[in-house]
Image (cartoon, rainbow, N blue to C red; front, top):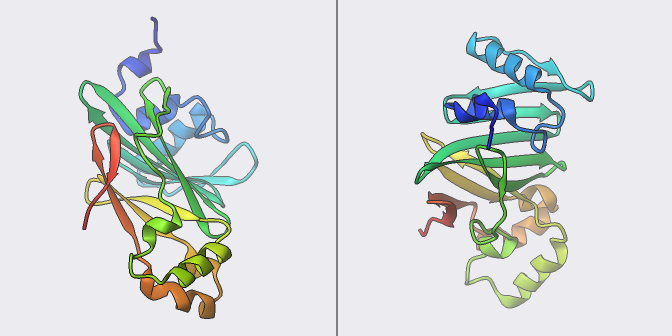
Length: 202
């Protein structure tokens, strides 16, 4: 099958961002994305106008990782890694609602998505609750937490870990959050295991 030359010769995450077909970057043309990379590599912090007349900015970039603010309310992180003979792009999209809420997807170099739910299970509020939380308090938390907003972000020197945090402190009134705080883990950590992303046991 004939593929665009850039796909076959892709070497960096910037190359892959440039050819993304618009599922992740619908507000930015290929030319705009390449311009952002050029400005960043020349040491210029430049905000470019996107297709909705808002501003977008490339915040971090190296050969395997980037962080891009696509609009005032959305940030995209991308991490490229090798799994066997394949290159996999893990993408975290975070929307400010205003409490941050993320989703994670994985793609091959042709921007075809890996759809199996067994590769990564998005954490829920129950995953942050310690076992010693009383059942009545657990039930109260489930009642008040109608929207389980979870933020994901790459961590580690090589961006090889993913940290999940809950938005309860921002979502709940301070007096309400204080009732639950002692029974909540502040964060969860995940690591790459081949195509899978698995919790790190502490």
